[in-house]
Length: 149
Length: 149
DNA sequence: GATCCCGTAACCGTTGCATTGACGGGTTTT
DNA sequence: AAAACCCGTCAATGCAACGGTTACGGGATC
Image 1 (cartoon, helix red, strand yellow):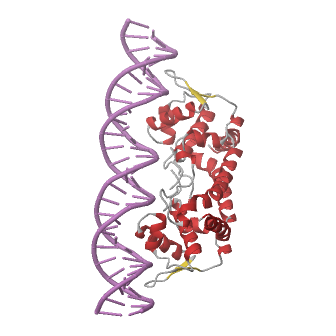
Image 2 (tube, rainbow over the protein chains, first blue to last red):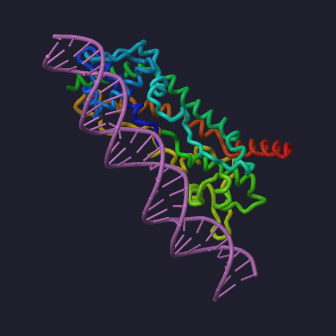
């Protein structure tokens, strides 16, 4: 299993807001065109990002605005906002180990700490990346493309 | 989405081999009893672990043996052996971004490096944990339980 | 009022997963 | 040699999450 594509779609959305926010009306239909998915999928994700307090979405007129500076929004914030993994747990545990077995009884105690360390390592790295980093890369990439065109 | 429970089941298997390998016949039925799942699920995972060269499984007589010292088998080895994530990629990318859009065209270039950094952070931590660590914890845990009983 | 656009509910097809039954083929025991 | 035991694998099933899609209600703008 992999982390839901909602996460990369959300990052794609932020990239589009950065690239087109000044020149185009960034609507769910517009975004769906760039990402090649259905507008409802976008609206669902926008709704999650807005519930998490990362953006505001203008109803009627359309338009997306960040509520904080790009440097203050981390990949982790986005990751959490879109519920990229269920229950916030990266690892899926088998549900009902046998309590009558010494190992089955203690398997959670045995593994939880180590699995948590793995998850923490991943989340720490997610927190290091911000939308500002993304914007910088994007600006560089787009100016290159313009020169080529 | 979460990482397949095959991974935690595999670790559970290793714990059982450690705890019962000397005193019981550790068969897929025995393991299924501790994990509370179906023997076929166990056999499937045993098959993957054996394909990866981590264990040998005795046919007929039943019995599981590690091919290396526990200290030389990392969580990462197990993680890879059971195909915990598809294609080895932690993140699921949306399939077909629009090539006619400057952002859609470059979204992979934009994100791949940063997502890889996150995945690397996670895998590095997985590589730090070995079955020997697990065995040590297990021995401690089991002796405590004995004292209580 | 017309138009544009978001928010949400409902339904569906796909996919990966775990469960289960069945059967073939080794290995050991008697 | 026969029986008992156990792994390896295939096939069928039920389930849950995901993404795609249609539809409709409700703000915002012109």
